[in-house]
Length: 250
Picture 1 (cartoon, rainbow, N blue to C red):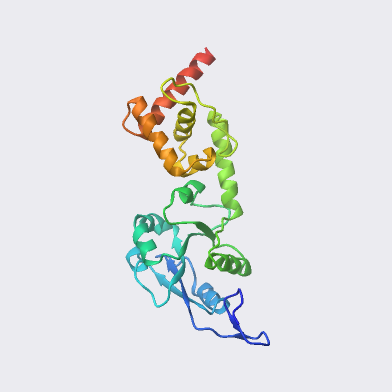
Picture 2: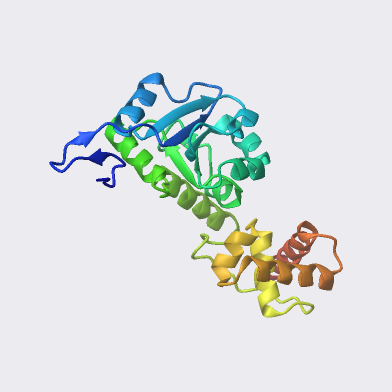
Protein backbone atom coordinates (compact mmCIF):
# COMPACT_ATOMS: atom_id res chain seq x y z
CA UNK A 1 0.00 0.00 0.00
CA UNK A 2 1.07 3.61 -0.59
CA UNK A 3 1.07 6.17 2.22
CA UNK A 4 1.28 9.95 2.09
CA UNK A 5 5.07 9.96 2.46
CA UNK A 6 5.31 8.55 -1.07
CA UNK A 7 6.71 5.21 0.13
CA UNK A 8 5.23 1.76 -0.29
CA UNK A 9 4.55 -0.30 2.85
CA UNK A 10 3.75 -3.96 3.31
CA UNK A 11 0.85 -5.33 5.38
CA UNK A 12 2.90 -5.01 8.57
CA UNK A 13 3.66 -1.36 7.85
CA UNK A 14 7.33 -1.87 7.00
CA UNK A 15 8.71 0.54 4.39
CA UNK A 16 9.72 -0.89 1.04
CA UNK A 17 12.30 0.73 -1.17
CA UNK A 18 10.73 2.40 -4.21
CA UNK A 19 12.26 3.16 -7.54
CA UNK A 20 12.26 6.90 -8.44
CA UNK A 21 8.97 8.07 -9.94
CA UNK A 22 9.42 11.85 -9.91
CA UNK A 23 12.24 14.32 -10.46
CA UNK A 24 13.29 17.20 -8.23
CA UNK A 25 15.10 19.55 -10.59
CA UNK A 26 17.67 22.03 -9.26
CA UNK A 27 18.64 24.95 -11.51
CA UNK A 28 21.82 26.53 -10.14
CA UNK A 29 25.33 27.38 -11.25
CA UNK A 30 26.59 28.19 -7.75
CA UNK A 31 26.23 24.93 -5.81
CA UNK A 32 23.38 26.27 -3.67
CA UNK A 33 22.42 22.75 -2.61
CA UNK A 34 25.21 20.50 -1.39
CA UNK A 35 25.67 16.83 -2.21
CA UNK A 36 24.84 16.09 1.44
CA UNK A 37 21.42 17.70 1.06
CA UNK A 38 20.79 15.90 -2.23
CA UNK A 39 21.61 12.58 -0.55
CA UNK A 40 19.28 13.48 2.32
CA UNK A 41 16.44 14.23 -0.10
CA UNK A 42 16.86 10.94 -1.97
CA UNK A 43 17.00 8.98 1.31
CA UNK A 44 13.92 10.74 2.71
CA UNK A 45 11.98 10.49 -0.55
CA UNK A 46 13.12 7.34 -2.35
CA UNK A 47 10.49 7.94 -5.02
CA UNK A 48 12.33 11.15 -6.01
CA UNK A 49 15.40 11.45 -8.24
CA UNK A 50 17.34 14.70 -7.88
CA UNK A 51 18.69 16.21 -11.11
CA UNK A 52 20.91 19.31 -11.15
CA UNK A 53 21.54 21.59 -14.16
CA UNK A 54 23.33 24.92 -14.49
CA UNK A 55 21.52 26.42 -17.51
CA UNK A 56 17.89 27.26 -18.25
CA UNK A 57 17.98 25.46 -21.60
CA UNK A 58 18.95 22.25 -19.85
CA UNK A 59 16.08 22.72 -17.38
CA UNK A 60 13.63 22.72 -20.29
CA UNK A 61 14.68 19.25 -21.45
CA UNK A 62 12.75 16.04 -20.76
CA UNK A 63 13.91 13.84 -17.87
CA UNK A 64 13.53 10.15 -17.09
CA UNK A 65 10.50 10.87 -14.88
CA UNK A 66 8.00 13.74 -14.61
CA UNK A 67 9.36 16.79 -12.79
CA UNK A 68 7.43 17.50 -9.57
CA UNK A 69 9.50 20.37 -8.18
CA UNK A 70 11.94 22.90 -9.63
CA UNK A 71 14.32 24.79 -7.33
CA UNK A 72 15.82 27.89 -8.98
CA UNK A 73 18.83 29.79 -7.68
CA UNK A 74 18.14 33.51 -7.21
CA UNK A 75 20.97 34.29 -9.65
CA UNK A 76 19.13 32.43 -12.43
CA UNK A 77 15.59 33.49 -11.52
CA UNK A 78 15.26 36.21 -14.19
CA UNK A 79 16.63 33.94 -16.91
CA UNK A 80 14.25 31.18 -15.85
CA UNK A 81 11.30 33.58 -15.87
CA UNK A 82 12.22 34.69 -19.40
CA UNK A 83 11.81 31.05 -20.46
CA UNK A 84 8.82 30.39 -18.21
CA UNK A 85 6.52 29.36 -21.05
CA UNK A 86 8.99 26.75 -22.27
CA UNK A 87 9.66 25.43 -18.77
CA UNK A 88 5.95 25.15 -18.01
CA UNK A 89 5.39 23.38 -21.32
CA UNK A 90 8.15 20.89 -20.54
CA UNK A 91 7.10 20.37 -16.91
CA UNK A 92 3.39 21.26 -16.67
CA UNK A 93 2.83 19.69 -13.23
CA UNK A 94 5.94 21.08 -11.52
CA UNK A 95 5.87 23.71 -8.77
CA UNK A 96 8.78 26.17 -8.85
CA UNK A 97 10.47 27.68 -5.80
CA UNK A 98 13.34 30.16 -5.63
CA UNK A 99 16.32 29.19 -3.44
CA UNK A 100 17.21 31.81 -0.83
CA UNK A 101 20.44 31.51 1.22
CA UNK A 102 18.88 32.91 4.41
CA UNK A 103 15.49 32.87 6.12
CA UNK A 104 15.50 36.47 7.41
CA UNK A 105 17.57 38.37 4.82
CA UNK A 106 15.88 37.74 1.49
CA UNK A 107 16.74 38.77 -2.05
CA UNK A 108 13.30 37.91 -3.42
CA UNK A 109 10.38 40.18 -2.51
CA UNK A 110 6.63 39.63 -2.29
CA UNK A 111 6.21 41.69 -5.44
CA UNK A 112 8.73 39.47 -7.25
CA UNK A 113 6.67 36.37 -6.51
CA UNK A 114 3.32 38.02 -7.26
CA UNK A 115 4.62 39.21 -10.63
CA UNK A 116 6.51 36.03 -11.49
CA UNK A 117 5.11 33.84 -14.27
CA UNK A 118 7.01 30.89 -12.80
CA UNK A 119 7.93 31.09 -9.09
CA UNK A 120 5.29 30.19 -6.50
CA UNK A 121 7.33 29.57 -3.33
CA UNK A 122 10.48 30.63 -1.50
CA UNK A 123 12.87 28.05 -0.02
CA UNK A 124 15.44 29.30 2.56
CA UNK A 125 18.58 27.22 3.00
CA UNK A 126 19.67 28.08 6.57
CA UNK A 127 17.12 25.85 8.31
CA UNK A 128 17.51 22.68 10.38
CA UNK A 129 17.64 19.65 8.13
CA UNK A 130 14.39 18.15 9.43
CA UNK A 131 12.54 21.45 8.92
CA UNK A 132 14.04 21.89 5.46
CA UNK A 133 13.01 18.36 4.44
CA UNK A 134 9.48 19.02 5.73
CA UNK A 135 9.25 22.03 3.43
CA UNK A 136 10.56 19.95 0.52
CA UNK A 137 7.83 17.39 1.28
CA UNK A 138 5.21 20.14 1.20
CA UNK A 139 6.50 21.47 -2.12
CA UNK A 140 6.67 18.00 -3.66
CA UNK A 141 3.00 17.56 -2.77
CA UNK A 142 2.10 20.80 -4.57
CA UNK A 143 1.95 23.04 -1.49
CA UNK A 144 3.46 26.52 -1.32
CA UNK A 145 5.82 27.93 1.30
CA UNK A 146 6.95 31.44 2.30
CA UNK A 147 9.40 31.90 5.20
CA UNK A 148 8.46 34.16 8.16
CA UNK A 149 11.23 36.56 7.12
CA UNK A 150 9.51 36.94 3.77
CA UNK A 151 6.30 38.11 5.44
CA UNK A 152 8.20 40.45 7.78
CA UNK A 153 10.03 41.93 4.80
CA UNK A 154 6.72 42.72 3.12
CA UNK A 155 5.33 44.31 6.32
CA UNK A 156 8.46 46.43 6.81
CA UNK A 157 8.32 47.65 3.24
CA UNK A 158 4.67 48.57 3.52
CA UNK A 159 5.28 50.43 6.81
CA UNK A 160 8.06 52.45 5.16
CA UNK A 161 5.73 53.25 2.27
CA UNK A 162 3.07 54.39 4.72
CA UNK A 163 5.46 56.69 6.57
CA UNK A 164 6.85 58.23 3.37
CA UNK A 165 3.68 58.94 1.44
CA UNK A 166 0.76 58.00 3.68
CA UNK A 167 -0.23 55.14 1.43
CA UNK A 168 -0.48 52.49 4.20
CA UNK A 169 0.14 48.77 3.89
CA UNK A 170 -1.05 46.68 0.99
CA UNK A 171 -4.10 45.33 2.79
CA UNK A 172 -4.75 48.28 5.08
CA UNK A 173 -4.04 51.36 3.03
CA UNK A 174 -6.68 53.93 2.18
CA UNK A 175 -7.47 53.68 -1.52
CA UNK A 176 -10.10 56.43 -1.56
CA UNK A 177 -9.50 58.14 -4.88
CA UNK A 178 -8.48 61.72 -5.53
CA UNK A 179 -11.22 63.28 -7.63
CA UNK A 180 -10.50 63.16 -11.38
CA UNK A 181 -13.52 64.37 -13.32
CA UNK A 182 -12.72 62.17 -16.34
CA UNK A 183 -12.81 58.95 -14.33
CA UNK A 184 -15.36 56.95 -12.39
CA UNK A 185 -14.76 56.26 -8.70
CA UNK A 186 -13.63 52.72 -9.49
CA UNK A 187 -11.27 53.92 -12.22
CA UNK A 188 -9.75 56.51 -9.89
CA UNK A 189 -9.32 53.85 -7.22
CA UNK A 190 -7.51 51.53 -9.62
CA UNK A 191 -5.34 54.36 -10.94
CA UNK A 192 -4.25 55.24 -7.41
CA UNK A 193 -3.18 51.62 -6.88
CA UNK A 194 -1.25 51.71 -10.16
CA UNK A 195 0.49 54.90 -9.02
CA UNK A 196 1.68 53.04 -5.90
CA UNK A 197 3.26 50.35 -8.07
CA UNK A 198 0.68 47.59 -7.64
CA UNK A 199 0.39 45.15 -10.53
CA UNK A 200 -2.90 43.89 -11.96
CA UNK A 201 -2.91 40.70 -9.86
CA UNK A 202 -2.77 42.58 -6.57
CA UNK A 203 -5.24 45.23 -7.73
CA UNK A 204 -7.69 42.49 -8.67
CA UNK A 205 -7.39 40.90 -5.22
CA UNK A 206 -7.75 44.25 -3.42
CA UNK A 207 -10.83 45.26 -5.41
CA UNK A 208 -12.46 41.83 -5.58
CA UNK A 209 -12.30 41.85 -9.38
CA UNK A 210 -10.91 39.54 -12.01
CA UNK A 211 -7.57 40.46 -13.54
CA UNK A 212 -9.33 40.77 -16.91
CA UNK A 213 -11.74 43.36 -15.49
CA UNK A 214 -8.82 45.36 -14.09
CA UNK A 215 -7.24 45.39 -17.56
CA UNK A 216 -10.49 46.73 -19.05
CA UNK A 217 -10.62 49.50 -16.44
CA UNK A 218 -7.01 50.41 -17.23
CA UNK A 219 -7.82 50.57 -20.94
CA UNK A 220 -10.66 53.02 -20.20
CA UNK A 221 -8.42 55.08 -17.89
CA UNK A 222 -5.70 55.42 -20.51
CA UNK A 223 -8.23 56.39 -23.19
CA UNK A 224 -10.02 58.96 -21.00
CA UNK A 225 -6.80 60.64 -19.87
CA UNK A 226 -5.40 60.76 -23.39
CA UNK A 227 -2.15 59.08 -22.39
CA UNK A 228 -0.27 56.22 -24.02
CA UNK A 229 0.20 53.72 -21.19
CA UNK A 230 -0.27 53.00 -17.48
CA UNK A 231 3.03 54.69 -16.62
CA UNK A 232 1.87 58.02 -18.06
CA UNK A 233 -1.52 57.61 -16.38
CA UNK A 234 0.16 56.99 -13.02
CA UNK A 235 2.39 60.05 -13.53
CA UNK A 236 -0.73 62.17 -14.21
CA UNK A 237 -2.28 60.91 -10.98
CA UNK A 238 0.85 61.60 -8.93
CA UNK A 239 1.06 65.14 -10.32
CA UNK A 240 -2.53 65.78 -9.30
CA UNK A 241 -1.82 64.29 -5.86
CA UNK A 242 1.27 66.49 -5.39
CA UNK A 243 -0.61 69.60 -6.48
CA UNK A 244 -3.46 68.87 -4.10
CA UNK A 245 -1.03 68.31 -1.22
CA UNK A 246 0.78 71.60 -2.00
CA UNK A 247 -2.52 73.49 -1.92
CA UNK A 248 -3.41 71.92 1.43
CA UNK A 249 -0.04 72.81 2.91
CA UNK A 250 -0.42 76.43 1.75
